[in-house]
Amino acid sequence: MRTTYELVRDHYAANDRKDLEGMLADIAPDCRWTEMDGFPCAGTYVGPEAIVEHVFMPLGAAFDNYTFTLERLLDAGDAAVAVGNYTATHKATGKAMNVRVVHVWGASDGKIRRFEHFTDTLRVAEAMK
Figure 1 (cartoon, rainbow, N blue to C red):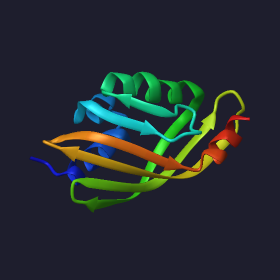
Figure 2: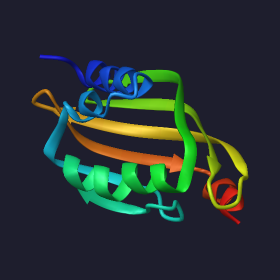
Figure 3: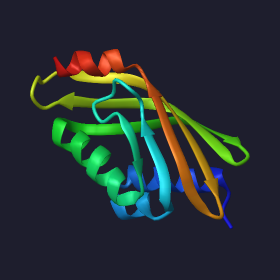
Figure 4: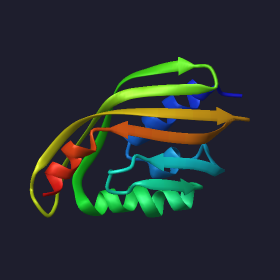
């Protein structure tokens, strides 16, 4: 069975390939995905379908070239911590953003069960104004 680190590494590899099916492959049906308060899609969503509907689709609709670039991935046993940057251009304003971000992941039984993200929501909001 793959470790949390390996599951998350594989998720990011699928993200880099723009492979949505691959990104969702290891997300458990009961995964609790939390987007930070103040972020455009803030809230906690449960399961792959809710994540796509409330996170991936709205971000894709609001931004061009929305990208997460992984700088480093840290193995913390049953957790993994990713550090990187979001870059994108807001479609309505034409403003670009480049924002630092941290993702905290948890997994058990070979599936991703938790995701929480931390970022500078002010910088995101500035791109949207």
